Length: 383
Image (cartoon, one colour):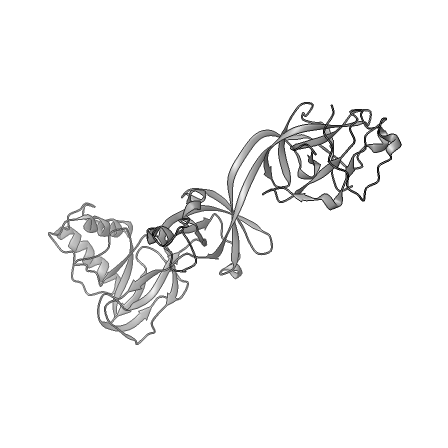
């Protein structure tokens, strides 16, 4: 099979007398070309017009086998390891701070977060904000949430439903007696803090003895699990859908498994992003002012010393299963365009065989073409 030749570089000597009898294949280090997106390189081939195979003296010194594999292309996104964005816990009443949970202490259902004038403020798990006082006769989802928490804490004698009954009030009095609160039989916004899940105290904003007023920030609560926080362009949001499994590359090269647990489009306040909108003054500014905030929860905790460190979140974006692959440095850029491989025959002679390329990933490339099969031996650069 004859291939068009590239114009011969001036600094390469070819034996003119040998041209009718054989071709020569030269791997030129100065002709290194970076394959787009591949993170590797391929090499130019220079050969004469003859279609005769090369003799054994021109066989490549370095070879590789064509293998059948699954190729995966990934993208790396930069984030910061921590515990996620803290939930700000604000006082709902006036008073003096007489008790405080410790920094980094665990927060679960029933945890005392702080005290105002010796009245405890307790964490409950749920999703309905405590916006009113609950007492006998009150009905609603917030009632059911409170009753569910009481039941989980071991109190009984009432039905877990949306009705606050006298039986509920009696259970509340028992609970208030146990935690050292005034036994009113009612529960209001100043008595509990609703959190979505168990977590940890992260950031104490007041000190014992401080006087607070409504909306004074007392402390922060973050997730109990370690989380990588990152920002992604809105156009790339599809890479980090909730539930996507990822690999987190830590300082030092270790890797940890993780899962995307939050992906929210918010206003970009950095002044640097274009939100993928790109346009001019007449476009809707909202298209240019958004960013996707993403949280990745680690499957298992890593060394606490790494908290606050930058990390890379590696997301698989494309997979090609059961394809023929070769090292990228086995590719030849043919003079007539396209790519080829230098196939090494059993007798040591070689031929250049044109190939179609597919995905580039991890220093390898998907190939297909005549005479290319699993186990085929091909020449490679780096000789």
